Length: 267
Image 1 (cartoon, rainbow, N blue to C red):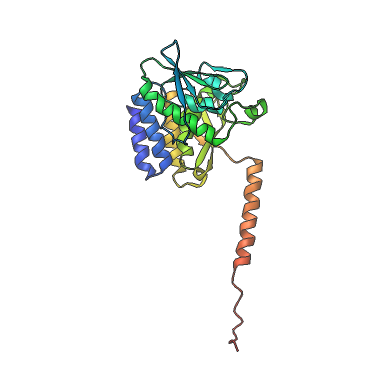
Image 2: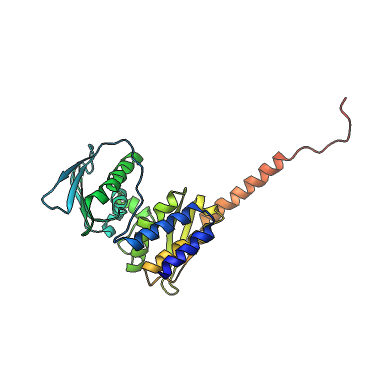
């Protein structure tokens, strides 16, 4: 209740910021329903068939195109989904317990207490949106290492939980507003998580409210080890880029200044 009240105050302070309001809605879904919920995505005009399995808790979704092509992949929990953008999207659906990818199908196993009528529309939308995006179903090892949001083998338990919550609950709300939030590091001694705001959120006047009242409250509520959230300082490459951009702005400003009047009348 206290956390819910904090999110209500965040919504008031946000003054209409869509990102913070999205996080408030995401938190409300988490607080009122079992599992981790996600707002439905838009359909992309793709037809997906479903097939029953001997297990009533599992349902096959056949998108009419290759999923794995060859081989298969098992995702028993959300931690295992870091290597697949499609699996991440599907685990963001409220009620999804486990996944299995075959050559041309996706098997979704639901959590106990959830009805397929609640889950299927969001699963359909997640699959449609994924294939419309043109992404690879599985990341290569190099892509996985380069992805700051992916759970790595050497991540400790807290870092893995932070990345999991960011990826399944927080980033979708931020991305809907034209931005993103990327994990930078966790300071075990202070309990502070450092994040980077990108896109529209990096220059948004309400970004501090989003970061502190939205993201911080959610992480602290679900991960007791987290004591706070701070925006990460720009790295060397970002500082260089900002410096060059400021120089460019200065040159453009100089070139756009009107010429000084000569005081003479035109003849």
